[in-house]
Image (cartoon, rainbow, N blue to C red):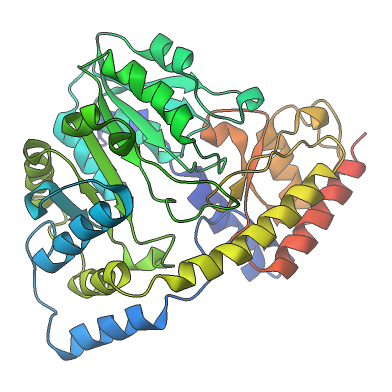
Length: 400
């Protein structure tokens, strides 16, 4: 009899964390490595948010809170959803967790039974399928194509739904592609969901504010009010407010679901860090002007990375609408050999050789469910990005 749970055998460690860890280890060993794997802004948390956290400490707000968040933060979330998304929620419909990942996990644990299916568009964030598996469900992968800018079509969603489908996980702008769905593109998907009343929608809006050019963000319950009673709208403060380490995510949805998620959290982690919660109140209620300023920096970096990768032999890189990732295709590099003698048969081979031979750490596309590709995070300095892209160009040029 195995000591470890059989469930654990169904999942794998996070590839994105593995890449960042390996890059850090190589750097510590004296290797010249540029890491493009981490999905977090390189900006410091804004000073007003830090000041609110310090004030909370000074005021002694260091005790346990309600399991799923303080009343002030839940109200700030309700205000944000009304202000930015036109969605009406009460604090009883809100759950606050230790990052968006815990919120998603709680919801899946609270709802999935053996045999329940969850439709996940690919490319997907690496944790979605494994969280479904941990919760006892079955991920059903619906592949979006590069021809449609890595966005799922209504026909593809329709084909993936069965009588066993319980959830559809939707992420826009996307990690890993940065693709954002327009109002009309999302309306086509919500029309499908309206024909299948047994399917709930879990929408990951973590990159809502990180959009560029003239793209306008919308979320499913905003586009189709008929989905309100079966939608869990998930968000957090990590990306737009440069608060990844503060670990605050949140969701709003039907009271019954929120109550079930609260029960799970009360018997697992209990409340998120009290200081982080007060910092998040300030993030949501305070000045928002730095988001636009940071987005200008991200947009400049995006444009540079897209241009330089498209100049690399064998690479095709679309221009994404949001987030801080690009997801180039390396179809033109497959079957070739590196100067170090490595045959490129998969995108994992490409990423491994790129790291070992040219010192650039990226995440291979297979980790996100669609190959042959790799993901670049451009949430790092212009200098690092320029040097990394030059190394990628040199790596590709040397393939034979």
